[in-house]
Length: 221
Image 1 (cartoon, one colour):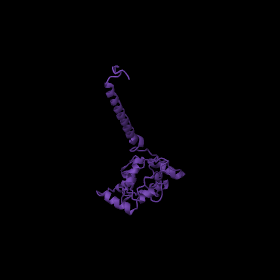
Image 2 (image 1 turned 60 degrees about the vertical axis):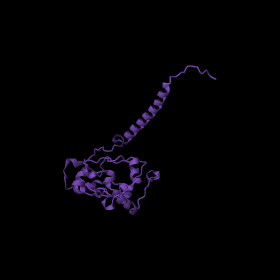
Image 3 (image 1 turned 120 degrees about the horizontal axis):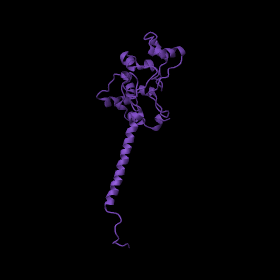
Image 4 (image 1 turned 45 degrees about the horizontal axis):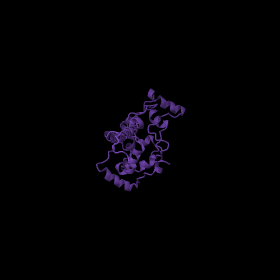
């Protein structure tokens, strides 16, 4: 047996210090994780809210809110294809061969039409290659343009409204009743969810046969 009278090597306060160190390390790690999560969700990483410069300063606010042009006039394939197409130059020239036909701002459009060389638009909503997204299924299930793209009709230059991160997609996939709207209102940029959105949404989820798809293979194929 050891000598009970052996002097204590560590002071009793060492126990308190050790406990404080363990708890302190835990809180520091938790704080670092919280900060990293906040940064990952911030516009700095997701680029949400960033306005993209374009070769031609096309204003959705002018064309949609001002002129009343429907989304489908330019994005013709949005109801029946995975990709909401960028309109060909001819679509622009349908109007601009007569309106602002000599505007210097629209010279890239006229040059594209003359040379048959596409305008190199800067993509705003750019999902990773490993994520599959089909516009047509969302449109036909009652998900409005503004639900994902925000108030495009009030944007002089288009910006990414939402994070486009997986948790953002999953929120809708888990709770579609919060977001679905009547199909006839999908392209209505002035549509506002009613006070009883969940009740209406639950009814539409059944009517449109919407399934809460959250398996990995739904988007990662």
